[in-house]
Length: 142
Ligand SMILES: C[S@@+](CC[C@H](N)C(=O)[O-])C[C@H]1O[C@@H](n2cnc3c(N)ncnc32)[C@H](O)[C@@H]1O
Image (cartoon, rainbow, N blue to C red; front, side, top):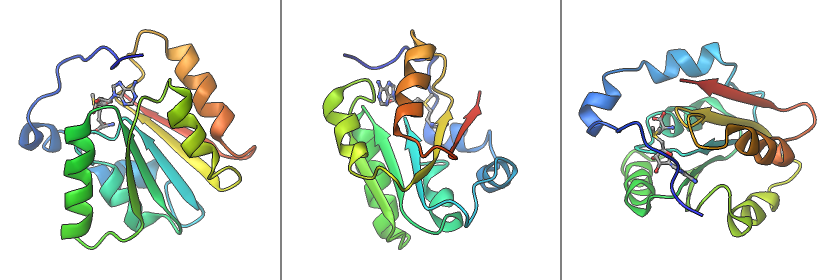
């Protein structure tokens, strides 16, 4: 599989200027009731990093782009986010979902932030739903 269609992601400083991530995350109910939070297509870590401070357990970021994943890892270490796991992988690929299935039972929030413009959004929602606890939530922004 491949990277989903991009609408042209701007440079990090411009992208970060678009959002108040913590405000958005709180509005979308990302809080201590969330154990494992999974950010699909975590990009620069705009939401992953603040989310890791809001949830009670682990914040997992997945991105197909190795550079994005490395950048998230470095920022997590730099800022002392000890509960972040950044994984390089394609969310539509079985090898990636099997890693996430090892967290089965604890994933109660999956964010699809600025990624649902992909070629097959229904398939992305289906995969996401299959990973989620029965009372879990999917957060979408676009
Ligand atoms: C528009 S950016 C959004 C980044 C982040 N969610 C945010 O809102 O700040 C989309 C991200 O999804 C990643 N992506 C695209 N296709 C993917 C796939 N099939 N599996 C995992 N990540 C993917 C891209 O590399 C990119 O970092």
